[in-house]
Length: 136
Length: 464
Image (cartoon, rainbow over all chains, first blue to last red; front, side):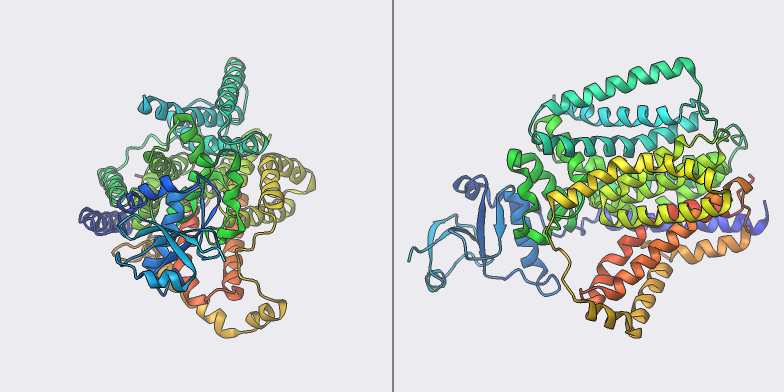
């Protein structure tokens, strides 16, 4: 084997190892966690019992799940509700009889619901609410 | 009880895959070939079971426990055929007789195992960080698996146009494997997607090392393994439970089988059937797999027809399509009947596409992004591609004459895929900057193990 080839191999091995050790160190600090999904899913345990097992429900929040670049947390919160409540379909809309309220502020002004023609069915105390549309 | 069910649920696809691979590739030695076939078996088994599970779910529904019986029947039938074949032991003899007996240097041995264990450590720690995986895992892949598992007779509601953000048009290999494994266990066990992701990650590394060890030299295989496992982005994505690493597996498996076919003494094309099957599974894993499948078939068509004449081409092409077609039919049915009218891509008219094609600045923007990604690819302490360029300069190239056609097919395939991706970015209706920054690295990752395989098939093999 040529000397240059040996140097090449040594460099490839060295850089591979250093790269891995760097990521291993970062991963050991546990700062990769974006959101604790288990905790998040637990928030909806009581709500699940009050919902039908399938069908379509609406979704309401105090932070609109818009573009990911604009509010990544709000979008994740919405997607994770779908992940958690599957096979129920959760649509980001108020045009459904039953609506899930997922609020970042746990104290929600009742007038907000009233203004939108909605009635609180049950408050699960942790920012999670079951809401329905007022019959006109 | 759950642990035993879990073991059986993963063992059945693996054994099915192994027997299937062995039917087309009956050789039983050397030991490293058994290992190579085992790594191929991971993807083949998951692919077969996932495809069958989809067809079963269409006819009955995913909750119907008869599927377990079907899997056991398939495994038993394959075992009987395998045992019959064992006695006859006639088959292909790919050129794997000359396995290098040279001992590899301690630097490579130590480097490989350090890389392997550090990569395993990274995988475990990242999984503990995010046991549900990363964004696309819970927004798309595992959400769909939950839907299929929990939905029973209503499982098709997962393709509802009300949740187009979850990409209902994405193919079902990964969600199918996960939900089918849960069905075996009878519960939604969280470790299942993690284990499947781990198996695919391991299989990609194992396939790269074992194939290059047989086709080039042990040292070459081990060095390629070091580079792959020392690519933090690859290991990180393995742990993310995304479908990119499984897709990378099927692309690599197709290329590996193509090279072994070209080394085969008898050109019966059996390994091409397997290669076709793997290419089909790539399209059943992610939509980008369809781009790979089309590119591979075009490249195969052009090179074999030009290089070996129409008679040889037709025979080989028939073998290839024999593997591709069953999966392609499933994909066509899925697109035509299950998710027929779902638009997950923003609509745009022909005029807009035309304007984008004439907009030079978009080409420049995409080209710059490709250049940046290639130079910095891997998330390592330095970009791995320039380093490999330097190594090529020091070692030189040495190509086995038997590999030339496979090499040209592989390079043209990669070229077509990259061109396809390039044009896709140029005309995308999405915000170009956002799309490039969130997807290009993952698209290149899908090709990374194959690019390494081809690179080490070209670069002069390490003698000792």
